[in-house]
Image 1 (spheres, one colour):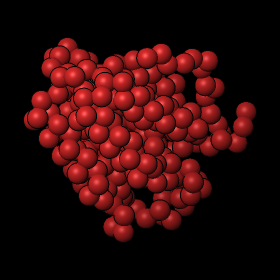
Image 2 (cartoon, one colour):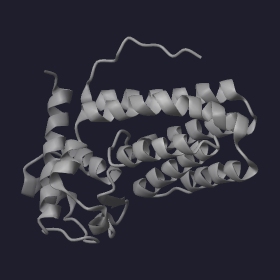
Image 3 (tube, one colour):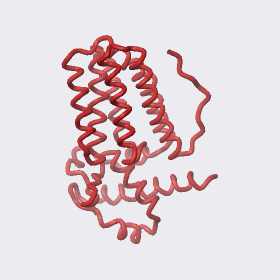
Image 4 (tube, one colour):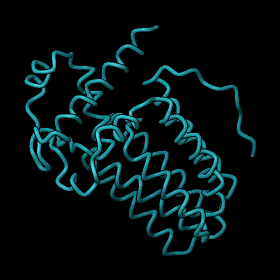
Length: 236
């Protein structure tokens, strides 16, 4: 078993421990967590594993990482119905990959349908999501802008069933970190490519751009979990 996989398991353990403390009331909604140095000392862990755990919890919507200010428990956490068991299950690498696979099956074709059917209002909603992504937000805000963009693409299909299916999957995916903040610029470029193809009514281009984006998401998830890549290919 490689060093990367051991690190992944440790970061999951750290995340579960922090979740347990939050669920147990050690940290309340809106509270600022101790400094990184204090957390490392208290938990007895290294910087890399702690940061990965914090990023995971931020992607799950539990923590808000504010660069230059600190790490905070999100104010609306109580409304999310925090459950240590439910959250910890979402940390599993295999679950992340299953969610990404489901998104690939649905969202690649969704982008193509949106290229054919999206209204001016749908395109405006996609642009609004892109603008929020470009605005230099916090990691939590970036994730929300990403979600808004993909929901706008789904609405562009004019298919309510697809919208509901993708909404459910994205709600689960929101709670799982599969990227780091350093990938924000790359993510913005990928989403811009999807938007340009949809706006140009280029169904094949939209399908290809969405696949390329989700393939990068899958690569990063596999790098975190060191899961073997399946022998598959996309057909258009």
